[in-house]
Length: 121
Image 1 (cartoon, one colour):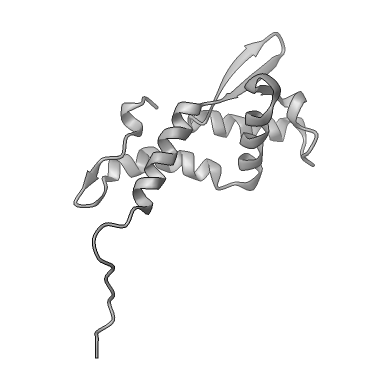
Image 2: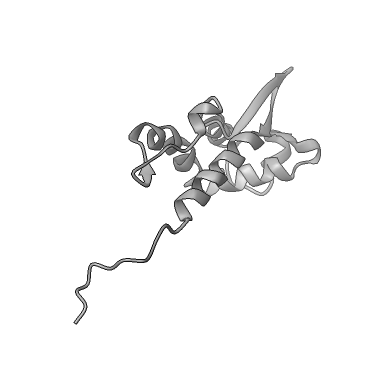
């Protein structure tokens, strides 16, 4: 995902279907508790990078399963990867996370007066 694809476009106070579609894979990837924890493990690793062998300890999962979850995070644009010999090292994509935080912040912003569907008596 490019930086321009990750920018929230407000039309009529909402998000376009295209922008919602571009963010859905990242939010779906983070919706899995294992992937959310893995992202945290990568972020907390010394030097800001980790391979599966470095972060598999706290998980009761096989190395291939962890690799699969990291692949999903990579495909969603939340981590980057670099192969070194037989290992793949992962880094958090800080730009994507910052943009995601901005999107969520925009969605949380209250615009105008609160309204209700209830009829006042």
